[in-house]
Amino acid sequence: DAGVTQSPTHLIKTRGQQVTLRCSPKSGHDTVSWYQQALGQGPQFIFQYYEEEERQRGNFPDRFSGHQFPNYSSELNVNALLLGDSALYLCASSLSGQVGELFFGEGSRLTVL
Amino acid sequence: SQKIEQNSEALNIQEGKTATLTCNYTNYSPAYLQWYRQDPGRGPVFLLLIRENEKEKRKERLKVTFDTTLKQSLFHITASQPADSATYLCALGRSSYKLIFGSGTRLLVRP
Image (tube, rainbow over all chains, first blue to last red):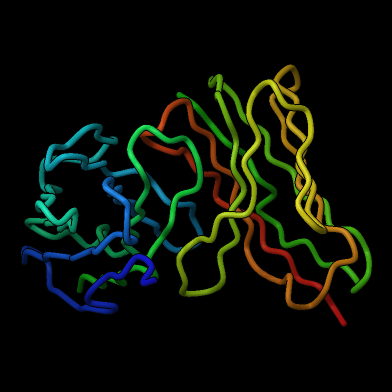
């Protein structure tokens, strides 16, 4: 049973560019959440997707957008990259309505130069 | 705004001892609290969840307490092993939506 898979694992971009990160949730899960983790910090909630809709959003600018597909996979898009966007981007999957553990992927390490 | 504090200094203990990690929070009333383990360059891995009406939860060598009056959770690892060395994250939630994470405490268990 595959867990949460994310791609790419590492990428380097320059300021002003755009990036798309991808996530496939754990089998049987229908909800995907995205978190940003800066070095030495805890993960910060970006947004959550369920039934292809953004259900809740954290304190992130509109440059951060997402999408969920009918197969529950998800994408995170970041436009007009800033140096401060350099971080580990984590995808977490869960089952809607259930309070419990989040299953995290290994993350996509984004470096903005 | 809500704030979660975990000891930013690494906790360095001898193998076999009990490790105790602290999570304090302010300006928030969580319905539940979770603990995760994170190894360098990896995603967090869920360990335990405790709800606001529970005082204590155990799982093998792990024990979590939750005091909503003190706004504090304690996380214990008994008979610690070098393999327990990692960063431990505390996270609070009120629904099935977002979790609010602390910045984590690094644990180092010396053989």
